[in-house]
Image (cartoon, rainbow, N blue to C red):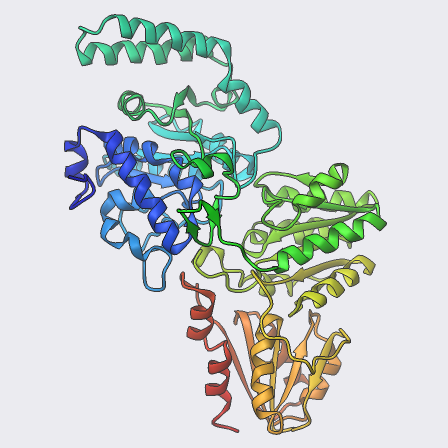
Length: 609
């Protein structure tokens, strides 16, 4: 009989004797779900044993478990009451692919970004101590996450807490791509430190030779081994210098060693860091061999063990253009924050290693580093997802725009991104970028427009943002102008005007094909600052509909209306945009729910037509 059948947490987890079999079943279920729904595969396969061990020791309701990023929570969801919902993972109306506060009391935070778990866990632990609550607080942080500055702000303050707080460093040598930088090298050094390995060999030998000993005495010897490691390395790690007791490295796929270790350290009244070594993709050979390719996948074909082949994307076009242009322009310098392959810079990295930097999960550093490059005479191009650019807002203002420096931001995944859900939708970059002086923002609709936008950015003297969506082109009309000015207007009817930008223009173009004699379309290419001639032309229309794949508050639609009112606009103006966080569903489903697709446009406009 399979263990997962009719599994209930936490009572059933306590009863299970064959935890390795449970791990095997969880791993099989993860592969099955990702095969059907897509999702994060390699990262989830790598933490199955760790998840079982953590919940075996810290699974009480009064305990708080905080996952950094949260995309490695599939086994955790199944073991904390959501097994019967796991087949709905990432689907419209189903459970999230990340930890989610609204789903379960076991999810303390909704988390899709990185490096925040230590600060969150410290806050939970401090609150628990002040209020006299029982329970332990655990933060599970990846080695990729500690390349981010926020993690060290957390470490710095956790070290002086003086109470029990457990930070588990899940070290698999990966973020999405291979980890880079001094921290990655430092962790490699810790993994192979001879004093640790020798201590472990001797201690394991002692335990192995006394098989007749009771479990309690074995646990005492294990505790002695941990203390011996700590004494031998006292003051010898960066974590201890920050005030945390360091234990490790520990095999992250040995459930029983993990359980014994956690059972001991939970009673030590000081901040603890446990260094756990795992293998990303563990238990699924293709993912073990290519963990970066299997980090997040659309869908699997488990029979063939291949990734679904996708058509050409905006990310591909960006990467090809920057590579080609850099062959002629030796000042272009490309930057990524741990995502060279995902943003299309893998080939650039190989061909121009001296003009490429992967800074790790450190978008704030990437932005200010880009400012330094620009001040030094280079043309920095920072390729970053819209959702992660949010983390560098201060640096954009202070270090780039205020200095009037020529930095190019290639903002990938702008707009709705689908199944990754609330934390990953690229819907906030437009409102916050448009408020900053000395920045131009382009939002191309098609591949060739992306290339033209990048050409304009390279020619510009100030900071330029080029934002483009996830995936491939939508419908491209044959009547589209070959020019790429700040804006283009199509149609002559002065009663109804649809204004839009980016890929939403494709739906407006389809609408125009049906009703070209009854409406006009204004296509904005440069969305900030808005060309005032576009405003003046719009004054002729009686009814204006502004469709925007972005947050409504502070968006281009509101700016457009403000400018119209300055010129005395007397007609009606309707903004159809996003007004809240957008949950996981397919992009098509999201666009439909938000009335941003063709059907939505027809419903909004047809009553006037």
